[in-house]
Image 1 (tube, rainbow, N blue to C red):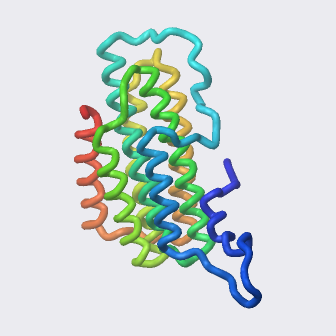
Image 2: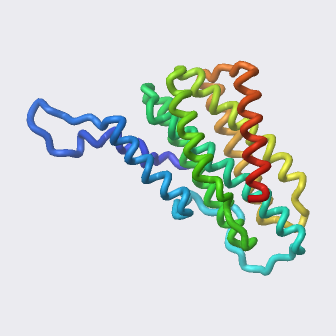
Length: 235
């Protein structure tokens, strides 16, 4: 698991800039927003880089899937891809306004691993001659905004959103693993590693004080997830 957290380097910006004696400029929220715009463009332009190798390894053999299987798997991976777009945007939105340095670090670390998942899903979509959802920019912006709003509710709710997000993602991954043909080992390897990471994120949130979200919030998250997955599978 990666311990390097490039996003946290901004917090050290003031110590690396020349300053007059007695004066030290602290990064502002506006600085953070500019950084986040750059990160969003990386994600949405499909130029983001993973910090870990793809668990499926190199694709050295031709696909053994028929046309129907390939189309269905591409739909599932498009759903997983948009889920990773939303998860890392949510965590980065939360981290931007989080005052607790330790929790902010946990959120950024989870976001980095979600980018790994996003890149792996995108790799598989390319192998299947498919593409991500055209609605990704909308889902990214909505999730980032939700993260910023959630951050104002305090650390327990920040972590509660993280835990509930990961719990719902785990359920999607379990369902997708059941739907995969046995011969599709490449997709299975990616989804199994993603599931392992998501479980770790949920447990981390719970161990650090995640509160159990009220039922209406959970229901709203599930409704949004249903809309997102239904559209992403096809478009």
